[in-house]
Image 1 (cartoon, one colour):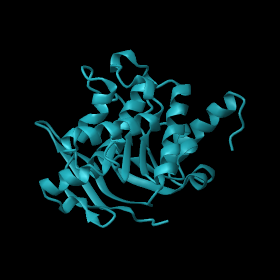
Image 2 (image 1 turned 180 degrees about the vertical axis):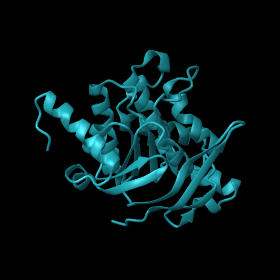
Image 3 (image 1 turned 90 degrees about the vertical axis):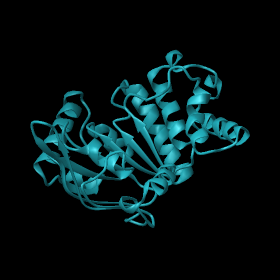
Image 4 (image 1 turned 135 degrees about the vertical axis):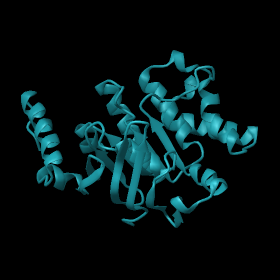
Length: 260
C-alpha cells in the first residue's frame, strides 16, 4: 500500500474576524495510503472539518502543501482545481441535497456540471443507485426519504464522477445507531469494490473502530497522534486519545460489553 497517496505537509489555516484572529490549523502533517479508510477524530473545534475542506480547497489554506497522487492540489489554478475536484467526492452531515430535485436529478447534478451527455449521465445515475441500494427511489424526492436513504443519495452523488477520494465530514452524526451501521457498511463495501480512498471525519470513536484501519487524533488545530486504529486503542499516547478511549471503554463496560 502506498502510504503517501494523500500527503499533507505543514498545513496552516487562519480565520480572521473583526474582533479576532483564529488559528484553526497549526502545521498539519498527514499521510493516507491509497485504498485506505482513514479516520480523524477530535472534539468539536479541533479543526477536523477545516482540514478536510482544505483537501479539496473548499477552504484555502494559508500555507503548506496537499498532494493527491501525483498532483499537488495547493498549486492548481482555478480551471485545474475544478477538474481535480471531480476526483474528490464529499458527503456531509446534513446531506446537502436539493429538495426540489428527484433522487435521480440530485445524483445527475455533478455529472451535468462535468458536461456528460444525458444518456451517459442516466446510465451513471442507474449505476450509482444500484451501488447504494436505492434503485426503487429513483423518482422520489428527498422529503420522502429517511435520513439513511438521504445519506445514501449523498454518497451516490459524491461517487457519480468516479472519484479517487471520498471525504466524509461527520456523515453519520445525524443518524440513529442502526442507520449509522448500515451507512458504514456501505462505505466499507464501496472501499472494497472501488478501491476508493476514504477520509472519515468524526467525533465518534465507535465509527472509527468499526470502519477504519488507520486514524489520527486532533486537538486545537494540531495532529497529536496517528497510526493503526488497534495500536492507538490499545496504547494511546496523547491525552486527547486517552480521554476519548477512556470514555469509550467506560460506555462499553457500563453496557456490559468488554472493551477489546
